[in-house]
Length: 235
Ligand code: E4P
Image (cartoon, rainbow, N blue to C red; front, side):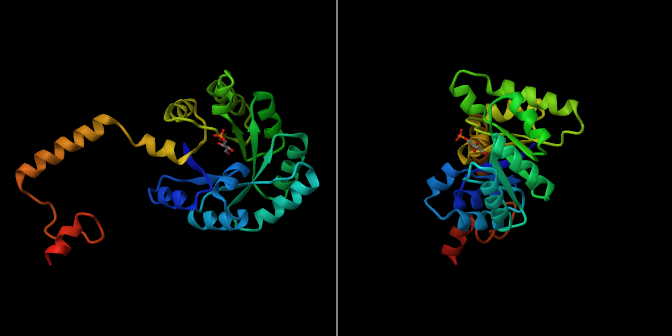
Protein backbone atom coordinates (compact mmCIF):
# COMPACT_ATOMS: atom_id res chain seq x y z
CA UNK A 1 0.00 0.00 0.00
CA UNK A 2 1.36 3.42 -0.95
CA UNK A 3 1.03 6.35 1.44
CA UNK A 4 0.16 9.87 0.34
CA UNK A 5 0.03 12.81 2.76
CA UNK A 6 -3.29 14.66 2.80
CA UNK A 7 -2.05 18.18 3.50
CA UNK A 8 -0.97 21.51 2.02
CA UNK A 9 1.30 22.27 4.97
CA UNK A 10 4.74 22.35 3.35
CA UNK A 11 6.73 22.04 6.57
CA UNK A 12 4.66 19.01 7.70
CA UNK A 13 5.13 17.41 4.27
CA UNK A 14 8.89 18.06 4.34
CA UNK A 15 9.15 16.59 7.84
CA UNK A 16 7.17 13.45 6.98
CA UNK A 17 8.87 12.99 3.60
CA UNK A 18 12.16 12.65 5.51
CA UNK A 19 10.82 9.38 6.99
CA UNK A 20 11.04 7.81 3.52
CA UNK A 21 7.45 6.61 3.93
CA UNK A 22 5.72 9.19 1.75
CA UNK A 23 4.87 8.23 -1.85
CA UNK A 24 2.78 11.26 -2.80
CA UNK A 25 0.58 14.12 -1.58
CA UNK A 26 -3.06 15.10 -1.99
CA UNK A 27 -4.34 18.64 -1.61
CA UNK A 28 -7.83 20.10 -1.92
CA UNK A 29 -9.26 23.65 -1.83
CA UNK A 30 -9.98 23.39 1.92
CA UNK A 31 -6.39 22.37 2.68
CA UNK A 32 -5.06 25.23 0.52
CA UNK A 33 -7.35 27.67 2.35
CA UNK A 34 -6.10 26.29 5.69
CA UNK A 35 -2.48 26.87 4.61
CA UNK A 36 -3.28 30.57 4.01
CA UNK A 37 -0.83 30.51 1.10
CA UNK A 38 -0.83 30.93 -2.68
CA UNK A 39 -1.97 27.66 -4.32
CA UNK A 40 0.56 27.59 -7.17
CA UNK A 41 3.46 28.51 -4.89
CA UNK A 42 2.52 25.74 -2.43
CA UNK A 43 2.05 23.24 -5.25
CA UNK A 44 5.51 24.02 -6.69
CA UNK A 45 7.13 23.54 -3.29
CA UNK A 46 5.34 20.24 -2.59
CA UNK A 47 6.25 18.89 -6.04
CA UNK A 48 9.91 19.68 -5.35
CA UNK A 49 9.85 17.90 -1.98
CA UNK A 50 8.02 14.70 -2.95
CA UNK A 51 8.83 13.18 -6.35
CA UNK A 52 5.65 11.04 -6.39
CA UNK A 53 2.14 12.03 -7.54
CA UNK A 54 0.87 15.36 -6.15
CA UNK A 55 -2.88 15.94 -6.52
CA UNK A 56 -3.99 19.50 -7.30
CA UNK A 57 -7.72 20.15 -7.52
CA UNK A 58 -9.46 22.33 -10.08
CA UNK A 59 -11.82 25.00 -8.75
CA UNK A 60 -14.15 25.24 -11.79
CA UNK A 61 -17.32 23.20 -12.21
CA UNK A 62 -17.69 23.36 -16.01
CA UNK A 63 -15.63 21.14 -18.31
CA UNK A 64 -13.94 23.84 -20.45
CA UNK A 65 -12.70 25.78 -17.41
CA UNK A 66 -11.72 22.56 -15.61
CA UNK A 67 -9.64 21.66 -18.65
CA UNK A 68 -7.97 25.08 -18.77
CA UNK A 69 -7.21 24.95 -15.02
CA UNK A 70 -6.08 21.32 -15.21
CA UNK A 71 -3.70 22.00 -18.11
CA UNK A 72 -2.26 25.03 -16.31
CA UNK A 73 -1.73 23.11 -13.05
CA UNK A 74 -0.28 20.10 -14.90
CA UNK A 75 2.31 22.44 -16.44
CA UNK A 76 3.67 23.37 -13.02
CA UNK A 77 5.55 20.11 -12.48
CA UNK A 78 5.79 16.68 -14.07
CA UNK A 79 4.38 14.92 -11.00
CA UNK A 80 1.11 16.89 -10.80
CA UNK A 81 -2.10 14.82 -10.86
CA UNK A 82 -5.26 16.77 -11.62
CA UNK A 83 -8.11 16.30 -9.20
CA UNK A 84 -11.66 16.74 -10.50
CA UNK A 85 -14.97 16.27 -8.68
CA UNK A 86 -17.17 13.30 -9.47
CA UNK A 87 -19.71 15.17 -11.60
CA UNK A 88 -20.66 14.75 -15.28
CA UNK A 89 -18.45 17.75 -16.15
CA UNK A 90 -15.64 16.40 -13.97
CA UNK A 91 -15.71 13.03 -15.71
CA UNK A 92 -15.75 14.67 -19.16
CA UNK A 93 -12.65 16.61 -18.12
CA UNK A 94 -11.17 13.38 -16.75
CA UNK A 95 -11.50 11.65 -20.11
CA UNK A 96 -9.92 14.55 -22.04
CA UNK A 97 -7.02 15.07 -19.61
CA UNK A 98 -6.37 11.32 -19.44
CA UNK A 99 -6.29 11.09 -23.25
CA UNK A 100 -3.79 13.98 -23.24
CA UNK A 101 -1.54 11.97 -20.90
CA UNK A 102 -2.32 13.84 -17.68
CA UNK A 103 -3.24 11.56 -14.75
CA UNK A 104 -6.52 12.39 -13.01
CA UNK A 105 -7.72 11.78 -9.46
CA UNK A 106 -11.52 11.76 -9.30
CA UNK A 107 -12.54 13.03 -5.89
CA UNK A 108 -15.67 13.22 -3.74
CA UNK A 109 -16.66 9.60 -4.42
CA UNK A 110 -19.33 8.20 -2.11
CA UNK A 111 -20.70 5.18 -4.00
CA UNK A 112 -19.63 2.18 -6.06
CA UNK A 113 -21.78 3.41 -8.95
CA UNK A 114 -19.79 6.66 -9.06
CA UNK A 115 -16.50 4.73 -8.92
CA UNK A 116 -17.48 2.60 -11.93
CA UNK A 117 -18.11 5.79 -13.92
CA UNK A 118 -14.72 7.21 -12.90
CA UNK A 119 -12.96 4.03 -14.02
CA UNK A 120 -14.75 4.17 -17.36
CA UNK A 121 -13.64 7.82 -17.70
CA UNK A 122 -10.02 6.64 -17.38
CA UNK A 123 -9.25 8.01 -13.90
CA UNK A 124 -5.81 7.11 -12.54
CA UNK A 125 -7.20 7.32 -8.99
CA UNK A 126 -10.63 7.27 -7.38
CA UNK A 127 -10.90 8.97 -3.99
CA UNK A 128 -13.66 7.42 -1.84
CA UNK A 129 -14.19 9.46 1.37
CA UNK A 130 -14.42 6.90 4.18
CA UNK A 131 -14.53 9.32 7.12
CA UNK A 132 -17.29 11.48 5.66
CA UNK A 133 -19.39 8.35 4.98
CA UNK A 134 -18.84 7.16 8.56
CA UNK A 135 -19.81 10.65 9.78
CA UNK A 136 -23.29 10.24 8.29
CA UNK A 137 -23.74 6.70 9.63
CA UNK A 138 -22.80 4.93 6.38
CA UNK A 139 -20.08 2.27 5.99
CA UNK A 140 -16.96 3.99 4.61
CA UNK A 141 -14.77 0.89 4.68
CA UNK A 142 -17.60 -1.16 3.13
CA UNK A 143 -17.30 1.11 0.08
CA UNK A 144 -13.54 0.43 -0.11
CA UNK A 145 -14.22 -3.33 -0.12
CA UNK A 146 -16.74 -2.91 -2.93
CA UNK A 147 -14.39 -0.82 -5.06
CA UNK A 148 -11.42 -3.17 -4.65
CA UNK A 149 -13.64 -6.10 -5.65
CA UNK A 150 -15.20 -4.36 -8.65
CA UNK A 151 -11.92 -2.96 -10.03
CA UNK A 152 -10.11 -6.27 -9.65
CA UNK A 153 -12.90 -8.02 -11.57
CA UNK A 154 -12.19 -5.94 -14.69
CA UNK A 155 -8.54 -5.88 -15.83
CA UNK A 156 -9.44 -3.07 -18.26
CA UNK A 157 -10.09 -0.82 -15.23
CA UNK A 158 -6.69 0.58 -14.35
CA UNK A 159 -8.00 3.04 -11.75
CA UNK A 160 -6.43 2.75 -8.31
CA UNK A 161 -8.40 3.01 -5.07
CA UNK A 162 -7.02 5.99 -3.13
CA UNK A 163 -8.62 5.83 0.31
CA UNK A 164 -9.41 9.40 1.39
CA UNK A 165 -10.97 11.20 4.35
CA UNK A 166 -9.08 8.92 6.72
CA UNK A 167 -9.69 9.65 10.38
CA UNK A 168 -7.58 7.08 12.27
CA UNK A 169 -5.05 4.23 11.81
CA UNK A 170 -7.78 1.55 11.82
CA UNK A 171 -9.09 2.98 8.56
CA UNK A 172 -5.62 2.41 7.09
CA UNK A 173 -5.23 -1.10 8.48
CA UNK A 174 -8.66 -2.27 7.32
CA UNK A 175 -8.21 -0.70 3.87
CA UNK A 176 -4.80 -2.40 3.58
CA UNK A 177 -6.36 -5.78 4.41
CA UNK A 178 -8.82 -5.20 1.58
CA UNK A 179 -6.02 -4.49 -0.88
CA UNK A 180 -6.65 -0.78 -1.46
CA UNK A 181 -3.79 0.61 -3.53
CA UNK A 182 -3.17 3.94 -1.76
CA UNK A 183 -4.17 5.70 1.46
CA UNK A 184 -3.92 9.46 1.81
CA UNK A 185 -3.17 10.21 5.43
CA UNK A 186 -3.61 13.40 7.42
CA UNK A 187 -0.18 14.03 9.04
CA UNK A 188 -1.58 13.32 12.52
CA UNK A 189 -2.79 9.87 11.45
CA UNK A 190 0.63 8.91 10.06
CA UNK A 191 2.29 10.09 13.27
CA UNK A 192 -0.20 8.08 15.34
CA UNK A 193 0.61 4.93 13.35
CA UNK A 194 4.12 4.89 14.82
CA UNK A 195 2.82 4.75 18.36
CA UNK A 196 2.26 1.86 20.73
CA UNK A 197 2.57 2.11 24.54
CA UNK A 198 4.46 -1.22 24.65
CA UNK A 199 7.04 0.16 22.21
CA UNK A 200 7.68 3.14 24.52
CA UNK A 201 7.75 0.94 27.62
CA UNK A 202 10.00 -1.66 26.01
CA UNK A 203 12.44 0.95 24.72
CA UNK A 204 12.61 2.60 28.13
CA UNK A 205 13.52 -0.76 29.73
CA UNK A 206 16.13 -1.58 27.06
CA UNK A 207 17.77 1.84 27.50
CA UNK A 208 17.82 1.50 31.30
CA UNK A 209 19.41 -1.96 31.07
CA UNK A 210 21.91 -0.76 28.46
CA UNK A 211 22.96 2.14 30.70
CA UNK A 212 23.73 -0.39 33.46
CA UNK A 213 26.30 -2.07 31.20
CA UNK A 214 28.33 1.15 30.98
CA UNK A 215 29.09 0.36 27.32
CA UNK A 216 28.90 2.45 24.14
CA UNK A 217 28.64 0.96 20.67
CA UNK A 218 30.39 3.90 18.95
CA UNK A 219 33.61 5.31 20.33
CA UNK A 220 32.83 8.79 18.91
CA UNK A 221 29.47 10.61 19.12
CA UNK A 222 27.58 11.07 15.85
CA UNK A 223 27.58 14.74 14.78
CA UNK A 224 24.23 16.45 14.33
CA UNK A 225 22.27 14.33 16.79
CA UNK A 226 21.18 15.08 20.33
CA UNK A 227 23.67 12.45 21.50
CA UNK A 228 26.44 14.55 19.96
CA UNK A 229 25.59 17.63 22.04
CA UNK A 230 27.19 16.57 25.35
CA UNK A 231 30.38 15.66 23.48
CA UNK A 232 30.52 19.12 21.88
CA UNK A 233 30.02 20.74 25.31
CA UNK A 234 32.85 18.65 26.77
CA UNK A 235 35.23 19.64 23.94
C1 E4P B 1 -8.25 13.91 -0.18
O1 E4P B 1 -7.99 13.83 -1.34
C2 E4P B 1 -9.54 14.42 0.34
O2 E4P B 1 -9.81 15.68 -0.18
C3 E4P B 1 -9.49 14.41 1.84
O3 E4P B 1 -9.00 13.17 2.26
C4 E4P B 1 -10.81 14.77 2.49
O4 E4P B 1 -10.67 14.56 3.88
P1 E4P B 1 -11.68 15.19 4.95
O5 E4P B 1 -12.99 14.47 4.84
O6 E4P B 1 -11.02 14.95 6.26
O7 E4P B 1 -11.80 16.65 4.61
